[in-house]
Image 1 (cartoon, one colour):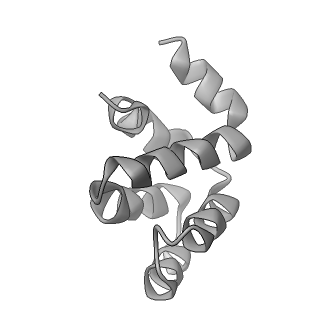
Image 2: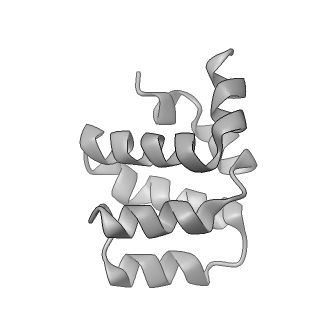
Image 3: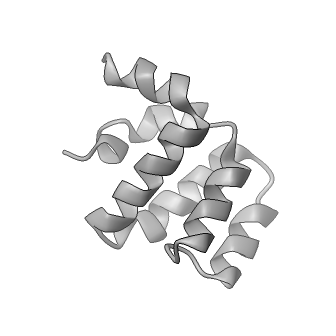
Amino acid sequence: MHFVDKHRVQLIQRVSNIAPILDELQYKEVIDQEQYDKIRALPTSQDRMRELYSGPLKASAACKDIFYESLLANEKFLVEDLSKK
């Protein structure tokens, strides 16, 4: 099971630095401008994460890999904590 699937609930609840992750996902064409704008408009980081999971992260393992790499870069300590579980 992919890391982002295994830790879905914790990632939704605990990712707080979502803006640079969205920027990277858009840059790497995991999400388009419309999805980016829609997700950014959501009021909370939890809502933004849920929207990512309901759409772009369902697409393929490659999208999940890019998301995971961005998590490592922007939420390093969270990823390390979840990796221990």
